Length: 72
Image (cartoon, rainbow, N blue to C red; front, side, top):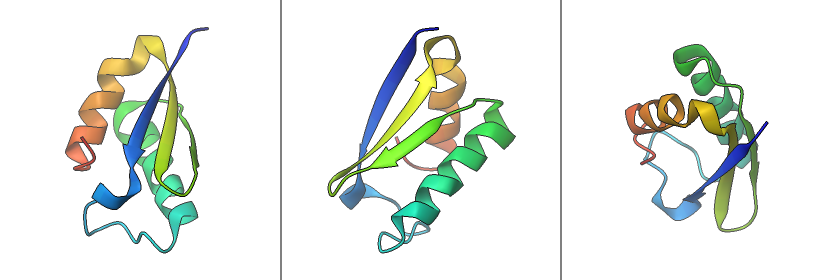
């Protein structure tokens, strides 16, 4: 299965996300993708970016959900 990586800069997170608690943010993103888009995603973060790994065939559902969250 092919996957696509989406990278989001941490400094541009909307205010509803607590940048000081990145693990909570990652969980919130994963849950929203699963609940709203039916997308199983894997998330990770480094000091500057959040990486969201999704199946390529679910990229449109992922983009729609991330847009609804204000992340893209």
